Image (cartoon, rainbow, N blue to C red; front, side):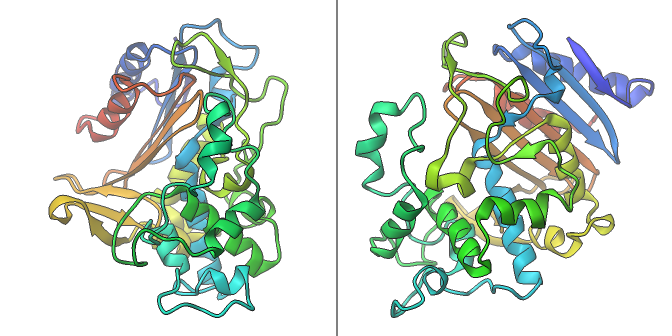
Length: 347
């Protein structure tokens, strides 16, 4: 068990260290990191079943899967702020300007809030992906194929009528923003989000060597290759160090001191309610749970060999980032442990 951070000398810090250590011990994975921040004070706890890697676990870059959608949503909010796009702009207007708009076009807002009517993935994705489902199922499905599948116009529901989680939709959003600005999505994200927020340990592709954490299958022993997302990069290609994930969440908690202040405030505002009785709240990028101590905003993610959780509580100035290198299982304690840390009233 290893700790880094600046909160170990305070009473609150000792309590945090105990809770983080318990969370790390509860997760059976080769590499596990639970990171906590409050008002800029950080404590990071790491461990796992594998030998300590050459680079400390808190310095490795971990795949965060769908939690990376929050970066694409923040990018959209910043482009809206600058006037380069609008929330209700039809995506097809950027991807196929010569195509006549339909009666109910899919807007950028529909795509980021999962109300586009698009399925989770295109129908033609599955036949080519199944042989590689435990490795890199997305790698050979190009950006051009994602856009072509979208422009074919096969939607399950009328845009804006239902909430349906969609990797397809957020990928289309990323390509729409790239087309609108004439800049590849990864370069656009780096220039507009990563560099302004000082996220030098965050990237959209593996770097090789010892910088990237190695994922493992459900058995916790079999290594899996680094994730390659093909045309679905805007929906899940991000990887970051635990300290960068805390820095990212801290920017959401204290946007005033950042270059993205307006966009960060925007993505915290509730946009819609969904689920039974409309109990579940969704912002432009985050899931939100209302509690007696104020709302908790969060997003999780999983890849073929890693898991991640990002969450923050504006009312308490608290953030939690957690990562591990074992594929998700139904009985996995990782997500419950991360959620419990954010919800703990004593932290």
